[in-house]
Length: 421
Image (spheres, rainbow, N blue to C red):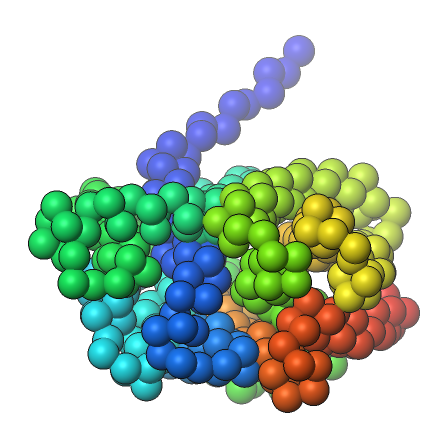
């Protein structure tokens, strides 16, 4: 009777993916922290909701992702490990400098520059994962990396108030009493970059595993897009609609709930941290199980179908936010919205890895990230603008109005994707 050969686990590669996930999670946590600090930042610089929305959208996403594209091109040619280490160190330095900015334009610039390092890192890691763990563990490693990033993002919300409290207590003890508490909190987060750079020196930097067959467009991102234009457009449109909705809600919801219902923003942040973590963690096995269960029956239609159905579930949750009678109801609707949109987005990295040739994956992810970032930037800018200029600072209603219509784009694109394939 033949024995089934056992495939060795790629422990070194998985450890590297784990480290990179933790690192990306720490970097992502500064977005949640910034959301909790937004009222204090708003008061310090004397700006309105529209400007805070631009801070979360244009500075935190659009500018960052645009400059991440050339960095990803370097990663397709040179040592990805060295570039990642440089990005981690640069993020820590820029976060620290942003916390010390004396005025809002400099603070805005510092946050945009720090965001560049975050957006550059993610596509490089996704290009690295197939070479670290091989095809057998690729999907699991993708989901594991996403889970660690999600943990960091949720920690920024959950621990933001605690970090602010700790920074307030430590300020005088370490000679930072002249700085406002929110600045001290950002300084503490920046210090996390130091051990991460040191630990990163021990991670793997594997050789690229090039495809067996390579076509004439494999080295050209433009050629790749032209060759698969219709599929790329549907992919970006489907993901983009969800991206606008998620970014319309997530960065601004803590301030919106605290303002409408006059509750403590730190408590709201704790709840949001749990909701974001649970939503992301639960979405990964849900998406994986559905994909495996229906893949044989639906073939390549299964992933856009998952995205479309999940978006249809999220849409009424966002719509009902405007009519929430209490903070607990608003947070429950937010949790349901986040879970559904996380399911919609869970398999996007795997889908893009399937599309892009191995020798240009970092550029493909960076190019995709920039296009999605253009959608993402619209979300908080639209929420803040509607609140400040049309709705008399009714931010919760503005979030609902910004999120609902754009999810229709995802529904249309996923329907066409399933129909045409």
